[in-house]
Image (cartoon, rainbow over all chains, first blue to last red; front, side, top):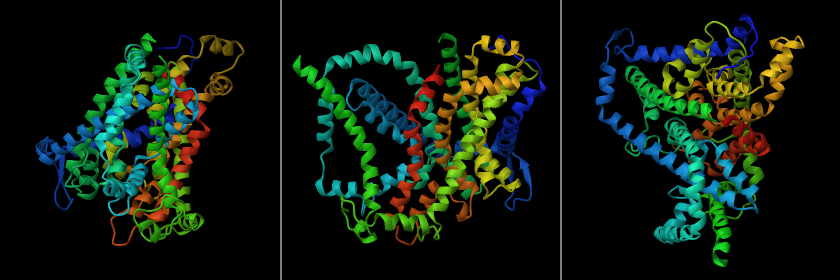
Length: 260
Length: 282
């Protein structure tokens, strides 16, 4: 899309663009280029010399069972996070749309988790589920709550009211489908990256690497393990994944712009 | 029919109240936790009735933090987070509004290249370029400074894209009218475009303030000195694996202090926030 009527001149727009371009080059392109360079090199043990090793870092990373396990965990974790977030979000949105009384309060409160950092949410749940003092952990242990019973009750209440349900699947959901797809991609990207804080806070990648997602591994191998070549190769692989996801998203946005 | 009508009101409320409880219960437990003494909180299961040490715990958190954070006051962490969030939000808006204006309202050589250069940064979140970005920050002596906390996060393809989408909807007639009045691009930007963008700016401010406040990985890397710790990182250090006992009553007070500013921003600006999101979608 382009504007028909525009202003003339080139100096003024270039000046307007300059600050953003400067920050972009210094903190985006330069480090990204460094990551790519680093990923095809290896430093000796003393950090005195580096040599070109072509794809060696990549074959090492991709052949590393720990890396593959981490990739698998990341995919599972992202699908779980995005799926749960979208399903519950959609459920609450549809329900909030059906009520009149209290709708504003429901919407405000259900919007609040957006403002809470995953790391902080992690601390709250850590406190609730702390094995020795966590109030939920203690209650569960003492009462032995039957979760299956609870789920059955929820299911029964959900089946109730078949006609609003049919209306949802035939009318509301098709209308929401494009938005849902967009949100799915955004949520997967979110699960990939923004969950570093909750992992670092709550599990530190453990137990036995069970929650070591790719971003955590990049950070750990680079900043703690100081294996720069491997960390850089992992960064480049992550970049490729994000580029793929962004391309999908962008195609989708452009389509919406054209047909909207 | 009666049953259907009744249940169609009852079911949504039940689901929504469940959602409310899931959101508010952890916060309530944190609140109660912040009003108890160290021994009360460790006496499992802890009470669900608030105790009488609220002011004492908050005063201690704000004034001297915990032993694990070497006595760094939470008040200082709050200030660091506030500066970081405000500078990132304001900085992103201040550099992306002009750049979007430049690519939409002008034709100049390499315009498309500039736009794409900004756009592809969407694909380079700080997480994929951790070590090299850290090196650059170190080379520019930005470690342990507000510049280091904010500058690398200030470029924003998202804000530029949102402004671009909005600017494309501004009617050509307005631009023509401005030209007839003899107004140049600078006047048009100040007198017409920025006032028209108020809702978008407000919505972006909310999104970007929360983005900045909740940053985790970058502050973790770029700050070492306790005096530069942000509150989100500070809480992590309070519960970190150590030999000393975690002082949960102080941690919970700090947690509440950490969520209060972004929550207030969302509540106070909810109307603009939602409106801005809906308009940005168009």
